[in-house]
Image (cartoon, rainbow, N blue to C red):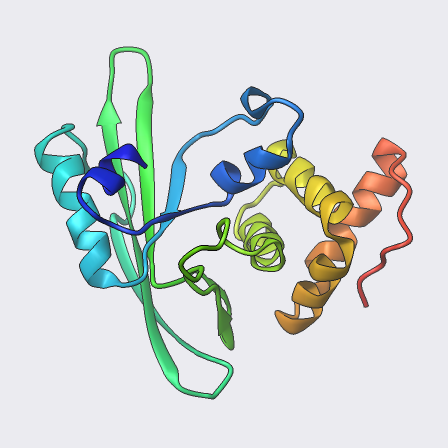
Length: 193
């Protein structure tokens, strides 16, 4: 984030970086990568340049390093979205940065929006939709993502339910909430349709 600020770029933390704010101690939230949102492709490329040229990041060699997807916005217009993965290898670990622009597809009919200037980041309603959509793309659910869902529901239940309905993520939300209630003893009055 300091690098982006030094280059006059607007970025927004998303996924684990964003939800770590809800934990009693941010160090409690494990990260396998750092996910950022930029307002557009130009900003994403301007962010990649110093990461590659100054800090030694490279495009991911063992995964699809760059992808584009077209989704429809609320007005029915097509929106081009994309993301790329950069990594920097160390002796004992790998640092990964995922850059998404201008939003993360939540379904074929919706995408996250870059937060307006002056806001405190990606809205929680969008963050829960991103987290649930992310859970659906993996073969197994990671506890860190389930914890994020729990904390967002605890923090902003009405906004979470609205986003789940808007993005048609009720099935994923019911799976996670059922697990939290059945296996973890979580009690909730919130129940996605």
